[in-house]
Amino acid sequence: MPIIIALIFAVTIVAVVARRNAPTRNCRWREDRAGSKGGLTKYNCVTCGAEVFRSTGQPDSCMSSLKTPKL
Image 1 (cartoon, rainbow, N blue to C red):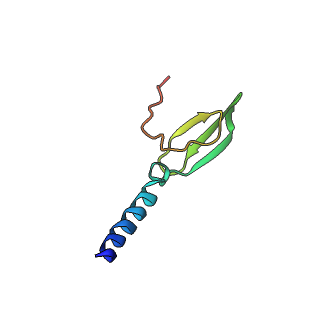
Image 2: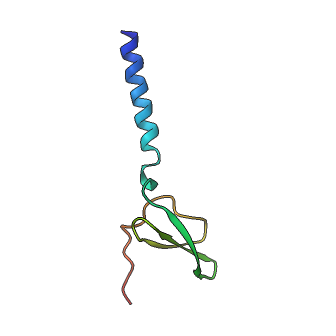
Image 3: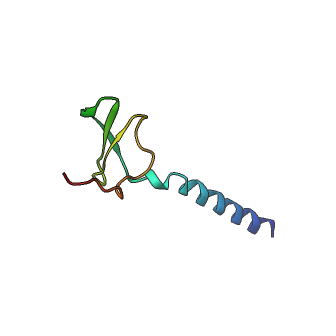
């Protein structure tokens, strides 16, 4: 019985650790210095194609759901 409880506990811990980085797992952000404006730095995601301007480092989640307005 203790082995079964330990196995369930171990599987739960592995599942929690695996889900911890889920929002950014597929995104790979690259800094685009040529596209930066003022104090904002432009970041492009190689995976989903999202473009984001940030003042505090690269994004920590996928921004592909953000819609940019057409001019």
